[in-house]
Length: 385
Image (cartoon, rainbow, N blue to C red):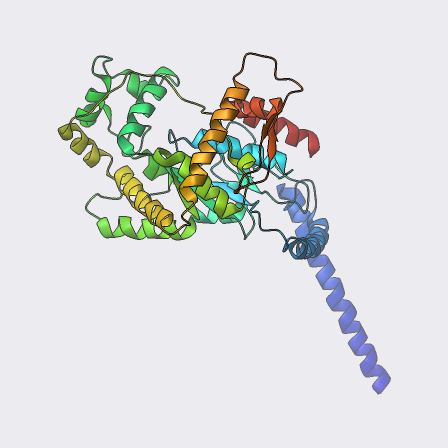
């Protein structure tokens, strides 16, 4: 009797194992039929093996990285015409210098969904995300590891719209901006939004609001909803840089991420010369109504930034002043007419950082425009995968 019961149990175990195997094979086949694979070029059964292996590797990597405090997983919200190309450039260079995985779209320079990203090797994850996108917390969470930090940037709305209007008209040949008479170009744009600026979101209207993920049906009168979303953003972003306080922003970012001066040096990029335009008080008030989200965003995060500055050490502004001298030296070195090959610029040790060298290669990368930089990174990625 006992032998018969053991036999029944054994038969049940075999049946359950067989059923599980059939299920896994069926799922695996379905993935193959519909062309879906959790990892590029793998099947579901292989994926299960990778999940186990990656989990083990992830644990060991986490334990091994406890001793370092430098932040290497960083997402940057690249806001249009707000000094963001400069920040993107230094993030790309940081990724290259530290051999990190930089998240890139399969084509162009925008990434709005996960299926647009270039694949990585199994068990690898992205570290740096700095391409144009529209902010959604879930998207950022899905793209980078759990310990990632998010950085943003804002710019004073009037100066931003003037810069953007000329740039998108003259460089990008924007259709709606080319319809505006060139005489009194900015004044026409601001004074006649019902004629030239009909969309709620555009290159010149509520642009920061769109980049930060605000809905396009939000009303200026809904102050509580706007404030609620701004508070949510503030809790999700480690830091929002202020273009008008660019050097202060970078030094503060350096401190928060435990980076070095070499990680934040820059050269000005993606700027477009244009006529200087001043708006009178009436025009500023009108534009504030037309592009109310951008003013709400800028004033909110300027206030947050100001509070952060008041909470830091007394020598912060000394560090900012020193950083400005470093930037001047770097610019002079990189723009010199003499041949800089096999020559390096030595920045001596300071109380805020160790000594470091700037090479000709650093200069070349700092002067590489966004699209060219992304294309080069994309080419390297495709060759390595």
